[in-house]
Image (cartoon, rainbow over all chains, first blue to last red; front, top):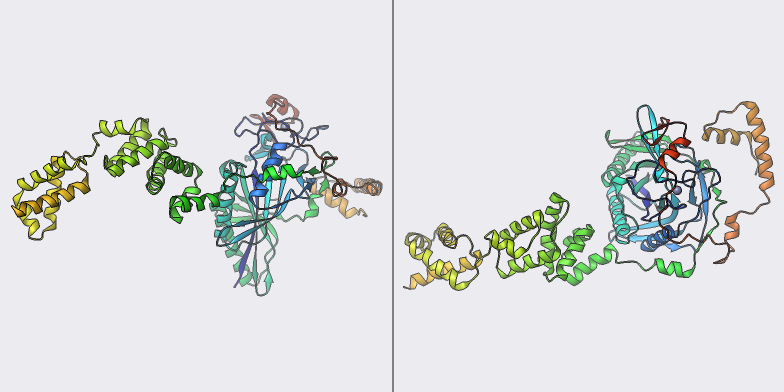
Length: 465
Length: 96
Ligand SMILES: [Zn+2]
Protein backbone atom coordinates (compact mmCIF):
# COMPACT_ATOMS: atom_id res chain seq x y z
CA UNK A 1 0.00 0.00 0.00
CA UNK A 2 1.09 3.53 -0.65
CA UNK A 3 1.06 6.53 1.60
CA UNK A 4 0.57 10.08 0.30
CA UNK A 5 3.26 12.63 1.12
CA UNK A 6 1.83 16.12 0.79
CA UNK A 7 3.37 19.54 1.29
CA UNK A 8 1.74 22.92 0.71
CA UNK A 9 2.98 26.25 -0.60
CA UNK A 10 0.60 28.92 0.52
CA UNK A 11 0.61 32.52 -0.67
CA UNK A 12 -1.08 35.01 1.59
CA UNK A 13 -1.64 38.65 0.60
CA UNK A 14 -0.81 40.88 3.55
CA UNK A 15 -3.19 43.56 4.75
CA UNK A 16 -1.16 46.72 4.20
CA UNK A 17 -2.18 50.09 2.91
CA UNK A 18 0.58 50.23 0.32
CA UNK A 19 2.51 47.80 -1.87
CA UNK A 20 5.71 46.02 -0.88
CA UNK A 21 8.18 48.30 -2.65
CA UNK A 22 6.20 51.42 -3.60
CA UNK A 23 3.42 53.60 -2.26
CA UNK A 24 0.66 52.45 -4.58
CA UNK A 25 -2.63 51.51 -2.93
CA UNK A 26 -3.47 47.84 -2.39
CA UNK A 27 -7.25 48.35 -2.50
CA UNK A 28 -9.07 45.49 -4.23
CA UNK A 29 -11.47 46.08 -7.08
CA UNK A 30 -10.10 49.35 -8.53
CA UNK A 31 -10.25 49.92 -12.31
CA UNK A 32 -7.45 48.06 -14.14
CA UNK A 33 -3.99 49.66 -14.12
CA UNK A 34 -5.12 52.54 -11.90
CA UNK A 35 -2.97 51.67 -8.87
CA UNK A 36 0.45 51.44 -10.47
CA UNK A 37 3.65 53.45 -10.62
CA UNK A 38 7.09 53.16 -12.23
CA UNK A 39 8.27 50.80 -9.45
CA UNK A 40 5.51 48.19 -9.69
CA UNK A 41 5.46 48.47 -13.49
CA UNK A 42 9.20 47.83 -13.60
CA UNK A 43 9.96 50.97 -15.60
CA UNK A 44 13.69 51.68 -16.15
CA UNK A 45 15.38 53.50 -13.30
CA UNK A 46 12.72 52.87 -10.67
CA UNK A 47 14.02 51.75 -7.29
CA UNK A 48 12.20 49.65 -4.68
CA UNK A 49 11.87 50.79 -1.05
CA UNK A 50 10.81 48.16 1.48
CA UNK A 51 7.46 48.78 3.21
CA UNK A 52 7.81 48.51 7.00
CA UNK A 53 4.14 47.67 7.49
CA UNK A 54 4.57 44.57 5.30
CA UNK A 55 7.61 43.51 7.33
CA UNK A 56 5.61 43.84 10.56
CA UNK A 57 2.73 41.80 9.13
CA UNK A 58 5.09 39.07 7.90
CA UNK A 59 6.78 38.98 11.32
CA UNK A 60 3.40 38.61 13.01
CA UNK A 61 2.64 35.66 10.71
CA UNK A 62 6.01 34.10 11.55
CA UNK A 63 5.31 34.46 15.26
CA UNK A 64 1.78 33.07 14.92
CA UNK A 65 3.20 29.99 13.16
CA UNK A 66 5.86 29.54 15.85
CA UNK A 67 8.67 30.16 13.39
CA UNK A 68 12.27 31.05 14.20
CA UNK A 69 12.74 34.59 12.91
CA UNK A 70 16.00 35.27 11.07
CA UNK A 71 17.61 38.46 12.23
CA UNK A 72 19.03 38.89 8.74
CA UNK A 73 17.19 38.00 5.58
CA UNK A 74 18.00 38.84 1.98
CA UNK A 75 16.14 39.71 -1.18
CA UNK A 76 16.68 38.11 -4.56
CA UNK A 77 15.37 38.25 -8.08
CA UNK A 78 13.56 35.19 -9.38
CA UNK A 79 13.52 35.40 -13.15
CA UNK A 80 10.75 34.23 -15.37
CA UNK A 81 9.05 35.62 -18.42
CA UNK A 82 5.33 36.04 -18.30
CA UNK A 83 3.19 39.07 -19.14
CA UNK A 84 1.98 39.44 -15.52
CA UNK A 85 5.59 40.05 -14.42
CA UNK A 86 6.59 43.43 -15.87
CA UNK A 87 10.22 43.44 -14.68
CA UNK A 88 11.02 39.96 -15.97
CA UNK A 89 11.71 38.93 -12.37
CA UNK A 90 9.91 38.76 -9.07
CA UNK A 91 11.55 40.11 -5.94
CA UNK A 92 11.51 37.35 -3.35
CA UNK A 93 13.78 36.21 -0.52
CA UNK A 94 16.53 33.60 -0.68
CA UNK A 95 17.46 33.71 2.99
CA UNK A 96 13.89 33.74 4.33
CA UNK A 97 12.45 35.97 7.00
CA UNK A 98 11.62 32.95 9.15
CA UNK A 99 12.09 29.18 9.29
CA UNK A 100 11.22 26.11 11.32
CA UNK A 101 7.65 26.76 12.47
CA UNK A 102 4.98 24.45 13.78
CA UNK A 103 1.18 24.36 13.90
CA UNK A 104 -0.35 21.91 16.34
CA UNK A 105 -3.80 20.75 15.29
CA UNK A 106 -4.28 18.21 18.02
CA UNK A 107 -4.66 15.10 15.88
CA UNK A 108 -1.61 16.01 13.82
CA UNK A 109 1.16 18.56 13.59
CA UNK A 110 2.31 20.58 10.61
CA UNK A 111 5.89 21.74 10.36
CA UNK A 112 6.59 24.98 8.56
CA UNK A 113 9.82 24.85 6.57
CA UNK A 114 10.05 28.56 5.73
CA UNK A 115 8.16 31.82 5.50
CA UNK A 116 9.34 34.66 3.30
CA UNK A 117 8.25 37.98 1.83
CA UNK A 118 7.72 38.45 -1.88
CA UNK A 119 5.80 40.61 -4.30
CA UNK A 120 2.69 39.53 -6.13
CA UNK A 121 2.42 39.54 -9.92
CA UNK A 122 -0.22 41.24 -12.02
CA UNK A 123 -3.46 39.55 -12.94
CA UNK A 124 -4.04 38.01 -16.38
CA UNK A 125 -7.43 37.52 -17.94
CA UNK A 126 -7.38 35.07 -20.83
CA UNK A 127 -9.82 35.57 -23.68
CA UNK A 128 -9.97 33.43 -26.82
CA UNK A 129 -8.13 36.15 -28.80
CA UNK A 130 -5.64 37.60 -26.36
CA UNK A 131 -4.51 37.98 -22.77
CA UNK A 132 -5.42 41.14 -20.84
CA UNK A 133 -3.17 42.23 -17.98
CA UNK A 134 -3.96 44.38 -14.95
CA UNK A 135 -0.93 45.43 -12.88
CA UNK A 136 -2.85 46.70 -9.84
CA UNK A 137 -1.89 43.48 -8.07
CA UNK A 138 1.76 43.75 -9.16
CA UNK A 139 3.87 44.47 -6.08
CA UNK A 140 1.23 43.68 -3.45
CA UNK A 141 3.01 42.15 -0.46
CA UNK A 142 2.75 38.40 -0.07
CA UNK A 143 4.14 35.90 2.31
CA UNK A 144 4.90 32.46 1.02
CA UNK A 145 4.51 29.76 3.64
CA UNK A 146 6.07 26.41 2.77
CA UNK A 147 5.20 23.39 4.87
CA UNK A 148 7.35 20.33 5.19
CA UNK A 149 5.88 17.33 3.32
CA UNK A 150 4.27 16.16 6.54
CA UNK A 151 0.62 15.97 5.51
CA UNK A 152 -0.75 12.49 4.81
CA UNK A 153 -4.31 12.96 3.55
CA UNK A 154 -6.26 15.51 1.51
CA UNK A 155 -8.48 16.06 4.57
CA UNK A 156 -5.45 16.97 6.70
CA UNK A 157 -4.28 19.41 4.02
CA UNK A 158 -7.68 21.05 4.01
CA UNK A 159 -7.90 21.24 7.79
CA UNK A 160 -4.47 22.84 7.96
CA UNK A 161 -5.28 25.40 5.28
CA UNK A 162 -8.57 26.31 6.94
CA UNK A 163 -6.79 26.73 10.25
CA UNK A 164 -4.06 28.80 8.63
CA UNK A 165 -6.73 31.08 7.20
CA UNK A 166 -8.23 31.52 10.67
CA UNK A 167 -4.84 32.34 12.20
CA UNK A 168 -4.19 34.99 9.53
CA UNK A 169 -7.64 36.44 10.04
CA UNK A 170 -7.43 36.50 13.85
CA UNK A 171 -3.99 38.12 13.80
CA UNK A 172 -5.16 40.74 11.29
CA UNK A 173 -2.47 39.66 8.81
CA UNK A 174 -4.73 38.99 5.83
CA UNK A 175 -8.40 38.78 4.99
CA UNK A 176 -7.62 35.45 3.25
CA UNK A 177 -10.42 35.66 0.70
CA UNK A 178 -9.80 32.76 -1.66
CA UNK A 179 -12.36 34.14 -4.10
CA UNK A 180 -10.39 37.41 -4.36
CA UNK A 181 -7.08 35.57 -4.51
CA UNK A 182 -5.71 36.86 -1.21
CA UNK A 183 -5.11 33.22 -0.16
CA UNK A 184 -3.71 30.89 -2.81
CA UNK A 185 -2.39 27.41 -2.48
CA UNK A 186 -0.20 25.03 -4.47
CA UNK A 187 0.45 21.47 -3.35
CA UNK A 188 3.29 18.98 -3.80
CA UNK A 189 2.37 15.34 -3.68
CA UNK A 190 4.09 12.01 -4.10
CA UNK A 191 3.31 8.47 -3.03
CA UNK A 192 5.60 6.49 -0.78
CA UNK A 193 5.54 2.73 -0.73
CA UNK A 194 7.75 -0.24 0.07
CA UNK A 195 9.64 0.24 -3.18
CA UNK A 196 10.42 3.93 -2.57
CA UNK A 197 8.74 7.18 -3.51
CA UNK A 198 7.29 8.47 -6.74
CA UNK A 199 8.47 11.73 -8.30
CA UNK A 200 6.99 14.86 -6.74
CA UNK A 201 4.12 16.39 -8.66
CA UNK A 202 3.11 20.00 -8.15
CA UNK A 203 -0.55 21.03 -8.42
CA UNK A 204 -1.34 24.69 -9.03
CA UNK A 205 -4.51 26.72 -9.09
CA UNK A 206 -6.13 25.28 -5.99
CA UNK A 207 -8.38 28.24 -5.46
CA UNK A 208 -10.85 26.83 -2.96
CA UNK A 209 -10.64 24.46 0.00
CA UNK A 210 -12.85 22.02 -1.86
CA UNK A 211 -10.70 22.22 -5.01
CA UNK A 212 -7.60 21.45 -2.97
CA UNK A 213 -9.11 18.42 -1.29
CA UNK A 214 -10.52 17.05 -4.53
CA UNK A 215 -7.35 17.68 -6.56
CA UNK A 216 -5.22 15.84 -4.00
CA UNK A 217 -7.66 12.92 -3.84
CA UNK A 218 -7.65 12.78 -7.65
CA UNK A 219 -3.84 12.72 -7.78
CA UNK A 220 -3.65 9.92 -5.22
CA UNK A 221 -6.01 7.84 -7.37
CA UNK A 222 -4.19 8.69 -10.59
CA UNK A 223 -0.71 7.95 -9.22
CA UNK A 224 -1.84 4.73 -7.50
CA UNK A 225 -3.27 3.53 -10.79
CA UNK A 226 -0.01 4.32 -12.64
CA UNK A 227 1.99 2.43 -10.00
CA UNK A 228 -0.36 -0.54 -10.17
CA UNK A 229 0.26 -0.67 -13.92
CA UNK A 230 4.01 -0.60 -13.29
CA UNK A 231 4.35 2.87 -14.84
CA UNK A 232 6.37 5.78 -13.51
CA UNK A 233 4.85 9.06 -12.29
CA UNK A 234 6.39 11.99 -14.18
CA UNK A 235 7.63 15.04 -12.28
CA UNK A 236 5.20 17.58 -13.64
CA UNK A 237 3.41 20.77 -12.81
CA UNK A 238 -0.30 20.18 -13.02
CA UNK A 239 -3.26 22.47 -12.87
CA UNK A 240 -6.58 21.56 -11.28
CA UNK A 241 -9.37 21.87 -13.81
CA UNK A 242 -12.46 22.38 -11.68
CA UNK A 243 -14.94 21.97 -14.53
CA UNK A 244 -13.41 18.72 -15.81
CA UNK A 245 -12.77 17.51 -12.26
CA UNK A 246 -9.22 16.42 -13.04
CA UNK A 247 -5.63 17.61 -13.13
CA UNK A 248 -4.05 18.67 -16.43
CA UNK A 249 -0.37 19.10 -17.29
CA UNK A 250 0.98 22.66 -17.28
CA UNK A 251 4.66 22.25 -18.03
CA UNK A 252 7.61 20.09 -17.09
CA UNK A 253 8.74 21.20 -13.68
CA UNK A 254 11.50 23.76 -13.92
CA UNK A 255 14.42 23.15 -11.64
CA UNK A 256 15.46 25.95 -9.29
CA UNK A 257 18.32 26.88 -11.62
CA UNK A 258 15.78 27.76 -14.27
CA UNK A 259 14.79 30.83 -12.30
CA UNK A 260 18.38 32.11 -12.15
CA UNK A 261 18.07 33.54 -8.64
CA UNK A 262 20.32 36.56 -8.21
CA UNK A 263 20.78 38.75 -5.15
CA UNK A 264 18.64 41.90 -5.50
CA UNK A 265 21.19 44.70 -5.89
CA UNK A 266 18.65 47.44 -5.20
CA UNK A 267 17.70 46.21 -1.71
CA UNK A 268 20.16 45.77 1.13
CA UNK A 269 19.65 42.84 3.51
CA UNK A 270 16.79 43.22 5.96
CA UNK A 271 18.27 43.37 9.43
CA UNK A 272 15.83 43.18 12.32
CA UNK A 273 16.48 44.43 15.80
CA UNK A 274 15.23 42.68 18.91
CA UNK A 275 12.54 45.32 19.43
CA UNK A 276 10.93 44.62 16.04
CA UNK A 277 10.92 40.90 16.73
CA UNK A 278 9.50 41.39 20.23
CA UNK A 279 6.80 43.67 18.82
CA UNK A 280 5.81 41.01 16.30
CA UNK A 281 5.46 38.41 19.02
CA UNK A 282 2.72 40.38 20.77
CA UNK A 283 -0.16 38.64 19.07
CA UNK A 284 -3.87 38.91 19.71
CA UNK A 285 -5.67 35.78 20.90
CA UNK A 286 -5.40 33.07 18.23
CA UNK A 287 -8.18 30.61 17.28
CA UNK A 288 -7.10 27.62 19.36
CA UNK A 289 -6.66 29.75 22.47
CA UNK A 290 -10.08 31.23 21.95
CA UNK A 291 -11.60 27.77 21.58
CA UNK A 292 -10.01 26.64 24.84
CA UNK A 293 -11.36 29.76 26.55
CA UNK A 294 -14.88 29.22 25.19
CA UNK A 295 -14.83 25.70 26.63
CA UNK A 296 -13.12 26.60 29.90
CA UNK A 297 -14.73 29.93 30.77
CA UNK A 298 -18.17 29.51 29.23
CA UNK A 299 -18.73 25.76 29.49
CA UNK A 300 -19.41 25.36 25.77
CA UNK A 301 -19.10 21.95 24.14
CA UNK A 302 -16.02 21.24 22.04
CA UNK A 303 -18.24 21.07 18.92
CA UNK A 304 -19.98 24.41 19.55
CA UNK A 305 -16.71 26.12 20.41
CA UNK A 306 -15.12 24.80 17.22
CA UNK A 307 -17.91 26.10 15.00
CA UNK A 308 -17.94 29.48 16.75
CA UNK A 309 -14.20 30.14 16.44
CA UNK A 310 -14.36 29.13 12.79
CA UNK A 311 -16.54 32.15 12.08
CA UNK A 312 -15.01 35.16 13.69
CA UNK A 313 -18.04 37.39 13.32
CA UNK A 314 -20.25 34.83 15.06
CA UNK A 315 -17.66 34.29 17.79
CA UNK A 316 -17.51 38.04 18.41
CA UNK A 317 -21.30 38.15 18.45
CA UNK A 318 -21.46 35.37 20.97
CA UNK A 319 -18.99 37.09 23.28
CA UNK A 320 -20.78 40.42 23.00
CA UNK A 321 -24.11 38.77 23.87
CA UNK A 322 -22.51 37.15 26.92
CA UNK A 323 -20.98 40.48 27.91
CA UNK A 324 -24.47 42.00 27.66
CA UNK A 325 -25.71 39.51 30.23
CA UNK A 326 -26.82 36.43 28.28
CA UNK A 327 -26.02 33.01 29.73
CA UNK A 328 -23.29 31.45 27.56
CA UNK A 329 -24.94 28.17 26.54
CA UNK A 330 -28.26 29.61 25.34
CA UNK A 331 -26.34 32.47 23.75
CA UNK A 332 -24.22 29.95 21.79
CA UNK A 333 -27.35 28.08 20.67
CA UNK A 334 -29.01 31.27 19.49
CA UNK A 335 -25.93 32.58 17.72
CA UNK A 336 -25.18 29.27 15.97
CA UNK A 337 -28.82 28.77 15.07
CA UNK A 338 -30.97 31.81 14.45
CA UNK A 339 -28.32 34.52 14.17
CA UNK A 340 -26.24 32.48 11.70
CA UNK A 341 -29.35 31.69 9.65
CA UNK A 342 -30.58 35.30 9.59
CA UNK A 343 -27.16 36.61 8.63
CA UNK A 344 -27.07 34.22 5.69
CA UNK A 345 -30.49 35.46 4.54
CA UNK A 346 -30.02 39.18 5.03
CA UNK A 347 -26.21 39.56 4.75
CA UNK A 348 -26.29 42.17 7.49
CA UNK A 349 -27.86 42.30 10.92
CA UNK A 350 -29.65 45.47 12.07
CA UNK A 351 -29.84 44.27 15.68
CA UNK A 352 -27.19 44.01 18.34
CA UNK A 353 -25.87 41.29 20.63
CA UNK A 354 -27.48 43.26 23.49
CA UNK A 355 -30.89 42.85 21.81
CA UNK A 356 -30.26 39.11 21.66
CA UNK A 357 -29.23 39.07 25.32
CA UNK A 358 -32.52 40.76 26.29
CA UNK A 359 -34.52 38.33 24.19
CA UNK A 360 -32.77 35.35 25.76
CA UNK A 361 -33.47 36.81 29.18
CA UNK A 362 -37.18 37.13 28.30
CA UNK A 363 -37.39 33.49 27.21
CA UNK A 364 -35.67 32.41 30.42
CA UNK A 365 -38.17 34.42 32.50
CA UNK A 366 -40.99 32.87 30.51
CA UNK A 367 -42.07 36.29 29.21
CA UNK A 368 -41.96 34.96 25.66
CA UNK A 369 -41.82 31.45 24.25
CA UNK A 370 -38.82 30.25 22.27
CA UNK A 371 -40.98 30.11 19.15
CA UNK A 372 -42.16 33.67 19.87
CA UNK A 373 -38.61 34.86 20.41
CA UNK A 374 -37.64 33.48 16.98
CA UNK A 375 -40.42 35.57 15.43
CA UNK A 376 -39.14 38.63 17.27
CA UNK A 377 -35.63 38.01 15.99
CA UNK A 378 -36.92 37.76 12.43
CA UNK A 379 -38.59 41.17 12.84
CA UNK A 380 -35.39 42.59 14.35
CA UNK A 381 -33.41 41.25 11.40
CA UNK A 382 -35.82 42.89 9.00
CA UNK A 383 -36.09 46.34 10.47
CA UNK A 384 -34.44 46.48 13.90
CA UNK A 385 -36.23 47.87 16.92
CA UNK A 386 -36.77 47.19 20.58
CA UNK A 387 -37.25 43.49 21.45
CA UNK A 388 -39.76 44.13 24.24
CA UNK A 389 -41.87 46.41 22.10
CA UNK A 390 -41.90 43.88 19.28
CA UNK A 391 -43.01 41.15 21.70
CA UNK A 392 -45.97 43.34 22.67
CA UNK A 393 -46.83 44.61 19.21
CA UNK A 394 -46.89 41.04 17.86
CA UNK A 395 -48.96 39.94 20.85
CA UNK A 396 -46.31 37.43 21.76
CA UNK A 397 -46.05 38.34 25.43
CA UNK A 398 -46.39 35.08 27.26
CA UNK A 399 -48.49 34.81 30.38
CA UNK A 400 -46.51 33.23 33.16
CA UNK A 401 -48.68 34.58 35.94
CA UNK A 402 -49.62 31.58 38.10
CA UNK A 403 -52.94 32.93 39.36
CA UNK A 404 -54.11 33.97 35.94
CA UNK A 405 -53.20 30.65 34.34
CA UNK A 406 -54.62 28.59 37.22
CA UNK A 407 -57.96 30.26 36.54
CA UNK A 408 -57.73 29.37 32.84
CA UNK A 409 -56.83 25.76 33.70
CA UNK A 410 -59.75 25.39 36.11
CA UNK A 411 -62.12 26.77 33.48
CA UNK A 412 -60.87 24.35 30.79
CA UNK A 413 -61.26 21.39 33.15
CA UNK A 414 -64.74 22.49 34.33
CA UNK A 415 -66.01 22.99 30.78
CA UNK A 416 -64.83 19.60 29.49
CA UNK A 417 -65.87 16.87 31.94
CA UNK A 418 -65.83 14.20 29.20
CA UNK A 419 -62.20 14.85 28.37
CA UNK A 420 -61.31 14.77 32.06
CA UNK A 421 -63.00 11.38 32.39
CA UNK A 422 -61.19 10.06 29.30
CA UNK A 423 -57.88 11.21 30.68
CA UNK A 424 -58.52 9.46 33.98
CA UNK A 425 -59.32 6.24 32.12
CA UNK A 426 -55.84 6.40 30.58
CA UNK A 427 -56.36 8.28 27.30
CA UNK A 428 -53.33 10.56 27.01
CA UNK A 429 -54.83 12.28 24.00
CA UNK A 430 -57.48 13.77 26.26
CA UNK A 431 -54.80 15.77 28.10
CA UNK A 432 -53.63 17.27 24.86
CA UNK A 433 -57.23 18.25 24.14
CA UNK A 434 -57.56 19.93 27.53
CA UNK A 435 -54.25 21.75 27.08
CA UNK A 436 -55.46 22.99 23.71
CA UNK A 437 -58.68 24.29 25.25
CA UNK A 438 -56.78 26.04 28.04
CA UNK A 439 -54.29 27.55 25.59
CA UNK A 440 -57.21 28.85 23.54
CA UNK A 441 -58.76 30.41 26.63
CA UNK A 442 -55.43 32.22 27.23
CA UNK A 443 -55.58 33.36 23.59
CA UNK A 444 -52.44 31.40 22.89
CA UNK A 445 -50.28 33.35 25.32
CA UNK A 446 -49.86 30.92 28.16
CA UNK A 447 -46.40 29.70 29.08
CA UNK A 448 -46.87 26.08 27.92
CA UNK A 449 -44.85 24.35 30.67
CA UNK A 450 -46.63 26.25 33.41
CA UNK A 451 -50.02 25.72 31.79
CA UNK A 452 -49.47 21.96 31.60
CA UNK A 453 -48.52 21.85 35.25
CA UNK A 454 -51.64 23.85 36.20
CA UNK A 455 -54.03 21.82 34.04
CA UNK A 456 -52.76 18.60 35.69
CA UNK A 457 -53.23 20.33 39.04
CA UNK A 458 -56.80 21.35 38.12
CA UNK A 459 -57.63 17.75 37.08
CA UNK A 460 -56.31 16.46 40.40
CA UNK A 461 -58.24 19.15 42.29
CA UNK A 462 -61.46 18.33 40.38
CA UNK A 463 -61.06 14.68 41.36
CA UNK A 464 -61.00 15.54 45.01
CA UNK A 465 -64.27 17.42 44.78
CA UNK B 1 32.04 29.34 -13.18
CA UNK B 2 32.36 28.49 -16.85
CA UNK B 3 29.58 29.61 -19.20
CA UNK B 4 28.81 27.09 -21.91
CA UNK B 5 27.00 27.54 -25.22
CA UNK B 6 24.32 25.18 -23.88
CA UNK B 7 23.61 27.59 -21.02
CA UNK B 8 23.30 30.47 -23.45
CA UNK B 9 20.80 28.47 -25.52
CA UNK B 10 18.81 27.41 -22.46
CA UNK B 11 18.63 30.97 -21.10
CA UNK B 12 17.55 32.24 -24.50
CA UNK B 13 14.84 29.59 -24.65
CA UNK B 14 13.53 30.57 -21.21
CA UNK B 15 13.50 34.23 -22.28
CA UNK B 16 11.66 33.15 -25.42
CA UNK B 17 14.43 34.53 -27.66
CA UNK B 18 15.25 32.93 -30.98
CA UNK B 19 18.98 33.44 -31.61
CA UNK B 20 21.09 32.84 -34.69
CA UNK B 21 24.36 30.90 -34.41
CA UNK B 22 26.34 34.17 -34.68
CA UNK B 23 24.27 35.74 -31.89
CA UNK B 24 24.85 32.73 -29.67
CA UNK B 25 28.55 32.96 -30.42
CA UNK B 26 28.82 36.65 -29.51
CA UNK B 27 26.57 36.39 -26.43
CA UNK B 28 28.61 33.44 -25.25
CA UNK B 29 31.78 35.53 -25.48
CA UNK B 30 30.16 38.51 -23.71
CA UNK B 31 28.74 36.42 -20.88
CA UNK B 32 32.09 34.73 -20.28
CA UNK B 33 33.74 38.13 -19.95
CA UNK B 34 31.02 39.39 -17.63
CA UNK B 35 31.26 36.39 -15.34
CA UNK B 36 35.04 36.58 -15.25
CA UNK B 37 34.93 40.25 -14.24
CA UNK B 38 32.29 39.83 -11.58
CA UNK B 39 34.02 36.83 -10.04
CA UNK B 40 35.92 39.05 -7.63
CA UNK B 41 32.88 40.96 -6.39
CA UNK B 42 31.40 39.73 -3.13
CA UNK B 43 27.64 39.40 -2.98
CA UNK B 44 25.35 41.17 -0.51
CA UNK B 45 24.35 37.84 1.02
CA UNK B 46 27.90 37.26 2.21
CA UNK B 47 28.18 40.77 3.58
CA UNK B 48 24.92 40.33 5.41
CA UNK B 49 26.12 37.50 7.55
CA UNK B 50 28.59 39.78 9.29
CA UNK B 51 26.42 42.90 9.34
CA UNK B 52 25.19 44.36 12.59
CA UNK B 53 21.79 45.89 13.20
CA UNK B 54 21.73 49.49 12.12
CA UNK B 55 24.59 49.22 9.70
CA UNK B 56 23.68 49.01 6.02
CA UNK B 57 20.29 47.72 7.07
CA UNK B 58 17.35 48.06 4.75
CA UNK B 59 15.53 50.71 6.74
CA UNK B 60 11.93 49.83 6.00
CA UNK B 61 9.90 52.84 5.02
CA UNK B 62 7.68 54.08 7.83
CA UNK B 63 4.01 53.27 7.36
CA UNK B 64 2.74 55.45 4.63
CA UNK B 65 -0.50 56.46 3.07
CA UNK B 66 -1.05 55.40 -0.52
CA UNK B 67 0.11 57.92 -3.10
CA UNK B 68 -1.26 58.24 -6.58
CA UNK B 69 1.07 56.79 -9.19
CA UNK B 70 0.41 56.84 -12.92
CA UNK B 71 -3.03 57.40 -14.36
CA UNK B 72 -4.63 54.58 -16.35
CA UNK B 73 -4.32 56.60 -19.59
CA UNK B 74 -0.60 57.06 -18.97
CA UNK B 75 -0.15 53.34 -18.31
CA UNK B 76 -1.96 52.14 -21.40
CA UNK B 77 -0.11 54.75 -23.48
CA UNK B 78 3.14 52.95 -22.56
CA UNK B 79 1.89 49.65 -23.95
CA UNK B 80 1.83 48.57 -27.60
CA UNK B 81 -1.84 47.57 -27.24
CA UNK B 82 -4.58 48.04 -24.69
CA UNK B 83 -8.24 47.23 -24.24
CA UNK B 84 -10.67 48.69 -21.66
CA UNK B 85 -7.79 49.80 -19.44
CA UNK B 86 -6.01 46.45 -19.60
CA UNK B 87 -2.69 45.87 -21.33
CA UNK B 88 -3.35 43.61 -24.27
CA UNK B 89 -0.79 40.92 -25.11
CA UNK B 90 -0.83 37.83 -27.33
CA UNK B 91 -2.78 35.01 -25.74
CA UNK B 92 -0.72 33.15 -23.15
CA UNK B 93 -1.43 29.48 -22.73
CA UNK B 94 -1.02 27.52 -19.52
CA UNK B 95 0.26 24.59 -21.53
CA UNK B 96 3.65 25.37 -22.99
ZN1 LIG C 1 3.57 51.15 -7.50
